[in-house]
Image 1 (tube, rainbow, N blue to C red):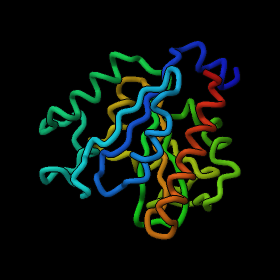
Image 2: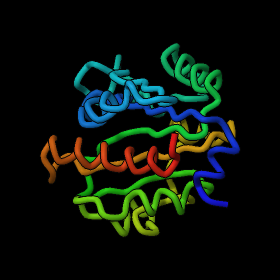
Image 3: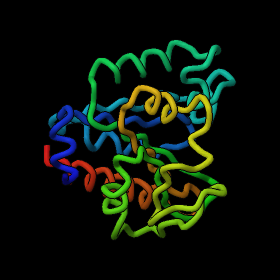
Image 4: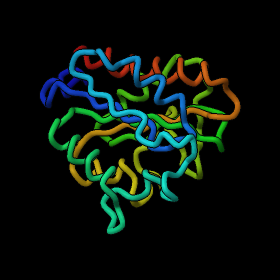
Amino acid sequence: MTFKEYLSSKNNKIVIISGLHGDEPAGNIAAKFFENDKNVYVISDINSTNKRRMNGRDLNRHFDTPDKNDIQDKIILGIEKLKPSIVISLHEDDEVDGVYAYCSTDLEECIKKCLDGIDIKILKNAHGDKTDDGVITNGKQPYKGTLERALRRRNISYCTIETPSKKESLEERITCLKQIVSNIINSYDL
């Protein structure tokens, strides 16, 4: 079964999430590029503090935890209501010099193809996890409390794209994220 066939057998919706960390602007800017695309739902600018944490909390470490808050509840409930085929979360990593992605195992081959040909280096390792052409499906991450773990618990396919935030310019990171997300959407053929 091709990726298009797989996604078509599910629901014709893609959710793009950005801005869980306020110090990662490229994702918010890139996500807005897709706001008017058919069957694409964008949840962006979640943390507008320009800091990693909001009210002292890392929003991407409190999904499905006893200390979660209304923001995480609203995000998860919104995703569950939409029943998307895939959730794409956009992030930046200040500790790496290349691109990598975490994804559910059902999307591994598609995401590898979608990373192919981008202008930023594809990482072979990220935070102690070995990548397969830039993709990690069964590594140490995603950590407890992350959106990815919450989606995995709900059997919702996901992909988290991480670009380097220090080595590349903001414009290069935005372009990279837009290219990868476009590749995913185009492989879905909405």
